[in-house]
Length: 141
Image (tube, rainbow, N blue to C red; front, top):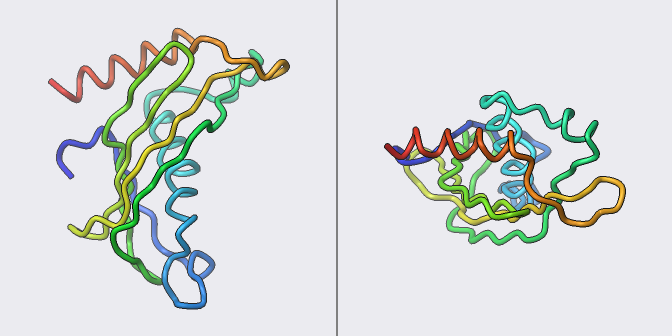
């Protein structure tokens, strides 16, 4: 997918499948949150541990995915971050998962940045926001 901001492959393992031998649907969501987002932020030099040390966390506020096709054991799924919208305290990440040229699933995650102790929303950290915005500008030009 040429216009994605970032992509990462994941190989379907046995434990990703269900009794029908297809990938269990929640794994697409898990891969997006636990593989694509951390790999993307790491590639930008963003260290989540530094946020936690500053009592900042990002929690999932909303998830929506539409499923289009199935994947099976040993398939390689490419997880794409297609767009990111940054608000005052929230970040919406849009994504799509492909097996070769076939769209498997697409959707979005909404994260809200919170104070780790009080769990109240707070503005997105400036250094995080500036790195994401700079990367998006560069990719879209």
